[in-house]
Length: 287
Ligand SMILES: C[S@@+](CC[C@H](N)C(=O)[O-])C[C@H]1O[C@@H](n2cnc3c(N)ncnc32)[C@H](O)[C@@H]1O
Image (tube, rainbow, N blue to C red):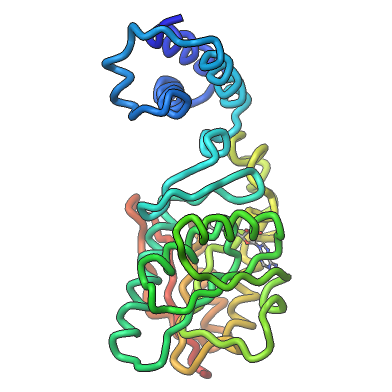
């Protein structure tokens, strides 16, 4: 079978299964299997595919037809210009989280310029390690630590740190209890689980049925981890330290209230590239 025919048939199949952008999805699968840039497919429509190539494509298209996210099928996604290994044990890094990572490494770079002591950051709930690895890659003089409650997620995060030749200290455990005695940071950054229990059932099938619920579930109102960070993060911040968090639609006001009740000073609430409020930056008034 020729490339064009495979694209057309597979896109038709994905359309029937209710997958969005079906043709693009198929083209990305073919580009991956054939190890060629997607645009080159357009110059190769008449190329005949071998049986092993067709078998691989069929299996990937079948999986995508079952709403498995393309990133899990391909095993990789891009984050801040870095390829990150992903599998169903970790949340797929989202484009909006790139903004949080960028804010974080720029803050570390600016601190490094004005400080002789090494600067440090903790990524709370690191998942694939995307934020921690991006910080370590872009602010190479900073000491980056990361924690997660999932051992399986940490093994993906370790793989990503190695993939980009970055040094990140990883800790396994429930929240701050994962950290060694005396750990303190200039910055704590987190994209915690923030979906409310009721909302989880209403998510797209790709997310609801395939991404780890431990990475999504933020408790009854989705705000459990902000309460935890508001209450516990000050003990792990150096004087003048900073907290940067990502949050979901409509949560900004509640999170600001939670933090202010715990004596935090909210310095900024920023929107992502779709103009949705997405990031909050705060300093602890009592530190
Ligand atoms: C929304 S995901 C974020 C992953 C990654 N930082 C990102 O931005 O793509 C949240 C992560 O927090 C971890 N997590 C959930 N509860 C935790 C806890 N009590 N202690 C530590 N990590 C936790 C989950 O395993 C998951 O990897």
